[in-house]
Image 1 (cartoon, rainbow, N blue to C red):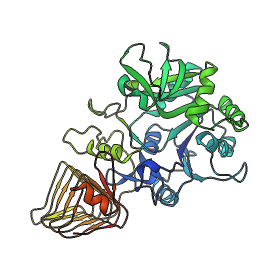
Image 2 (cartoon, rainbow, N blue to C red):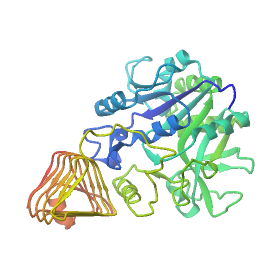
Image 3 (cartoon, rainbow, N blue to C red):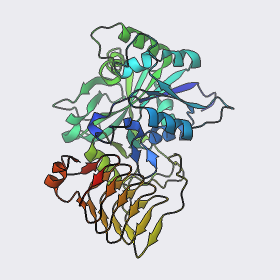
Image 4 (cartoon, helix red, strand yellow):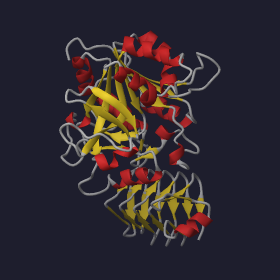
Length: 407
């Protein structure tokens, strides 16, 4: 785009992430590790950076230390052209209260908009797994002349009641914004599909700031982006949907094009990891044309000894597979799998150790977990519950940070 407009990207990263407990017991949801070496927030920041939108403010609040540290150590932009990634804690500029909703988080941080004076404001969530050329969505927003654009992903109408749903006309104008409707509307060109909101928005600055101020003064508002801000623009006739299926990211495969996952639950988080490890993955981390950036752990390459094996798995730097077998799993740095141990369909965080003859099956082991020799986890649901481990609806066992699994 010639005469590129000034764009400020605001990433909402203050959520508590209760549905991801116990992984969020000691960290903010966007700081949860993913894919071996990444944090969840790396995906949205990478999408923005790859799109050339390099002025980013990350609004944090809940247990944000590890998130703030990760941003400070990893996301250092060149200042020559005004680029930055700024971690912004709750500042209490408008009173002695924390954020009362996603819209209130931005209202309390209006100084960011005032200082930068952007033409357009990109507001994205911090904890979904996807690739997206945000610049294409921005161009669609500018071309429309409207004040609000909402990214929508097509989902089967039979499953749409679980999402915030966008009812749009043929020209993409949003007619209604519905929260988990019992009878979701189909699409004009595909009656068996519905548009689910991705929680990604673009606004024209003046109208957005005016709306935030009006919302702050409304005692009946929940100060929520999806619940209050977007419906306001819909009622004005100033909102459109951006069809995510039209987004073309360089290097995408036919299989992972338009991939988007909300990893807000343990089951969804585990399933998204399983999407990474097949020969032809559902989501390809190895796309060099649109890389996902992070701070790479300083450690030697993974080591396999005593006929240790890993099949259909991601094994990060510093790992030692010493005679054990790893299958369809994701191992973060410095994981040790000892002789005759078996790890199957599991996600293991940094520094965990799996002892001899141990079995880890369909489990998530947080940082520093020690599975003792001969111990089993993820094999017997009742036994895992009796030991105080969290077990999800689909049977994924989670062992908390620095925990132990006894034989």
